[in-house]
Image (cartoon, rainbow, N blue to C red; front, side):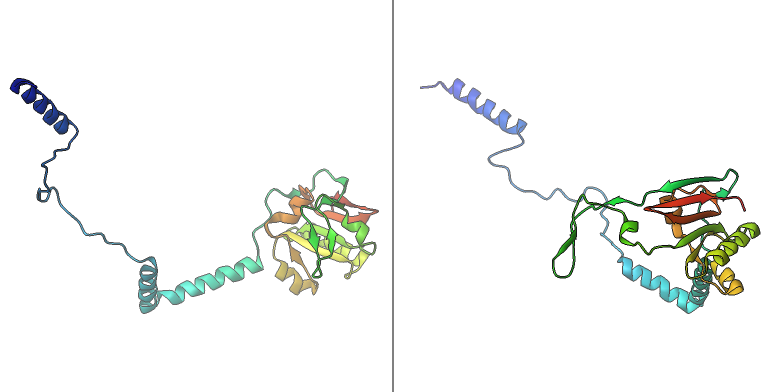
Length: 217
């Protein structure tokens, strides 16, 4: 049987351990009151905020001005798209052959499930289009010499065969003036694909490849 002193020592150690561990068998919940300032949670609905701004703009007449400004920017982007960056007027003419062969990334099938191209196949579109004889001209519509060169190519090969593609300038202005279809290389995707750095550039078929020539008009 333990002595009263031993029991008191054990009880004291147990109480100390309970305090150190943050627990007490007789602990009870207590309201400690407010400690610091409290704020309500407020979250503004984004759609409500946008709707309120639109209503305010409409009431003030500002929305009409915004619509007109947007329409002007849209028309301006059609009349004169952003020029393809990185292209200059031809200083040193050069010419090379371009192989359009590409590797099929995955199987392709028709509406009946018949696979006509399998992943890994290498295909040259020119071999599947023996009648392809299109002539393509890339040029700067703000350069009178390049425009004259493009029109000379058009007259040489014919309008049905020639495709004129601007990299700078106004395609609608040229179409109205010359009464011919003109395209624009949006974002420079074609110029990048054919690795052009100078214009005007002429692309014609040469067997199973394309002859690309950056010429000086």
